[in-house]
Length: 397
Ligand code: PLP
Image 1 (cartoon, rainbow, N blue to C red):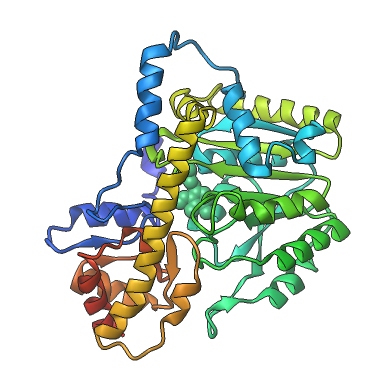
Image 2 (cartoon, helix red, strand yellow):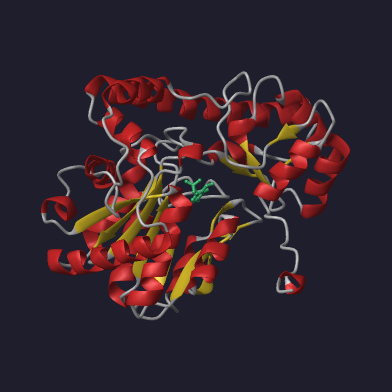
């Protein structure tokens, strides 16, 4: 019996929480674990722009034949425009090639598999803390993991000096995972000057940036959130981007993202890309079409694109409103500890500073589910569940 040797896998720190939440029978339960946007009524809606694009596709799609390994061409072009801007030199000099891939996770995994098999880069530096799945994806693909400091718990702020100090010890060819914007879980991003400094450090030491760009548009705006990536792309000769449209198009279950390689010459990019395609061929052959066709239909149609921008702005603004309300409601619930730092964080998450024990009490005693690190999905807060959440937090502090 071969399965008799298999041990039960531990629950996933984020998705395992969703399973526990579903099994919870308490009526006032709130899930602030997984990063899913909820509207004011607590629903995760399909964007109108997506619905219109799907109607258009239903009427015009003629075939369900296989895509190429790299996916939908128009989609891949649109991805590059969103990431770099259509006129960026990496695009106009043909130094960037993009392959559609299944979500941000699939894109990161394809990138990691490619790097392990076809380059000498075997070590990746990830921020401490980071999204729980990074370690899992990279180590499963065979990369060695190292950590750089990112966060100073006492001040709830970026520890940029320590970040630089740690990355100074990296070796030529090492990979550096950078969150494009809305750092998960801290919600704290680099400013442009700091991005420039990291770009120059990577250039000087021969480090290769791997961008995880899962929240474009959830920080300050679609263009604003790409500044860090563009600063780095202006400075270093080589990089990889794994981006996701799960959140900013609300296409979570369509599994749509992309991996983009930027090489120092167009020929080197072509070579690297050919191995990205062979990695895809060996894992899922070619990607599913629907999510990519939705995104490219929206981005190629001026009116649909504008509608998407408006809808994304609405999501961004609602989360910002919840952030402010969260800080105010904690005060109203009698919390004297200062949580004002939450107002300065970007994106879907708030890194609350709550301890593991407090997180467990929130779940066990109050049916409020947040990730063990103290990360709270502000995108899951509404005016209705806010008093329940804040009363619970006040009791565990
Ligand atoms: N990267 C980060 C930082 C994330 O937070 C997430 C999702 O939560 C992803 C990647 C993966 O996104 P996807 O659901 O598209 O695989």
